[in-house]
Length: 314
Ligand SMILES: Nc1nc2c(ncn2[C@@H]2O[C@H](COP(=O)(O)OP(=O)(O)OP(=O)(O)O)[C@@H](O)[C@H]2O)c(=O)[nH]1
Ligand SMILES: [Mg+2]
Ligand SMILES: [Zn+2]
Image (cartoon, rainbow, N blue to C red; front, top):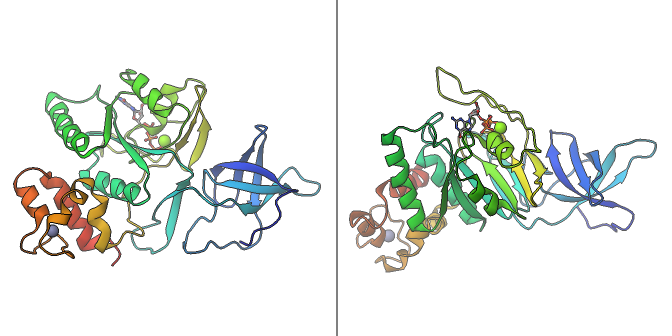
């Protein structure tokens, strides 16, 4: 959209988006439903949602009405985008203008695969967004599952990701989560049922977000949160609660640069014999060597190969 004079417009932040209506909070904490002016296209991105939660927008109040019309979107500091569905090429902007992404992960009820985790992390690496893994539901795990968590935690911490283990149920380690979130704009992402909404309620008792059950038969969540929504935190900062994602479809990641989205590969790849090594079957590959030596976790490498073979756009 062409830049317009914004003098007569009100500035606000999109805190909720339900499709055609956006809830916008202005600096004086007024909340107003806004729609988007006419047809709106964004350069470069083919998105299913032209306006996302976190966007800073300029709007005017419709004559004789309570509602507003968004006239302009401020340039985004960053976005996190995924493919809207696996079959589609269109992008879905999950949120914008973030300080960090918190990926909520569970070993059980539901189980989060490392394939999902690594797709998410590769995406946030591509957008230069800091990610932390929040292992939730530690009150539920068997000793064997706690051991699995310990191994995963060790791998991700060694790569350089911060990892917390928490329980929304018992409150364990929530002080650490709170400290991480204070005065920041944080995105909560993860499968349905991992406890994103429950964690937000547990760290800020003023918020009363609806939480869902876990299906007894499938140990999966029931997609209780249906729209991304941004909540102000009483202790400072903002949290964006999002609907659970089944699969994290990669958008905008290229095969040539995928290895750079894996910090532990980024570190080693200059030592591959070929400068254009894809780390699959080339001789003299430093990455394969590091996997054999145990310096790179085999599951991370396997997830890299999977991403190279199917999901990544060529
Ligand atoms: N035992 C245990 N249960 C938890 C914990 N955190 C959340 N739950 C339960 O897990 C279920 C799902 O929690 P939600 O907060 O609705 O999950 P969500 O990630 O927001 O799910 P969607 O909104 O569907 O994406 C609820 O029954 C919660 O009570 C935890 O730390 N321990
Ligand atoms: Mg939820
Ligand atoms: Zn290589």
